[in-house]
Figure 1 (tube, rainbow, N blue to C red):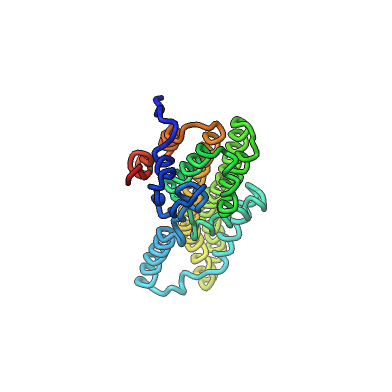
Figure 2 (cartoon, rainbow, N blue to C red; figure 1 turned 120 degrees about the vertical axis):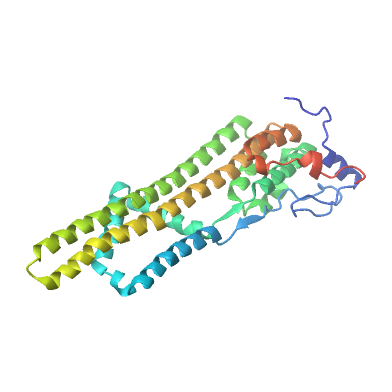
Length: 312
């Protein structure tokens, strides 16, 4: 892999000559004497907030179902406490039996978190990593101690830079950070697995409720007044199970998996950057390593297009 023979990146030259005034992605500030052209510790902009896609999708699905219910009859006919008890209680009980109370609690918290999911912009993360690499190349990795207070909002990045400033070998930093990324991904995967299991159990509990209702109905053929409630139990449990499993739990499981993938990508970028900085590699090579991980639509051309040049 070819690396530029120029040991000083264009951005560093611009900072030395006073020509660099900032950095792309809104993290720039003017350079002052004795510091880089921009603060590499500035936080990366968050994307997200309320997950509009999830909320709109769930609301639309619920709206379509309610419209169908109210158009064809009374909504009160679809309310049956015994059916809800079988589906909700049975789904929770069987899912808990499949995992543990702690796993189930974490999964429900993860499901709630995806509704207000916030993620770091991968392109902004890559730019921030390159800024840190440039600062470390100009003044040495120890200079990153100065930006540690600005990184507290991003705990993983803060730990990564702390390991660099403490002088740990690059291989040790890589082992520690990769291990943390894998452990976090495993936790997210377990939460998604809990929700997937619950989405499978809910329709099955609906079927069990249907069988219970049919047995009750067949045992009450001599009493016409008991046939209606038993038939309602038989049908509504299937309805509740199908809605809970396919309209609520399965989409939430998919969202948890997607959020886990985005989190793993950001932490992988930070890991690559930390190891490269610890090895004191050329930031141009680091840019290539980052682009190898970023999706095609998120790749950056920082040194070719974004970094200020002398006289700019």
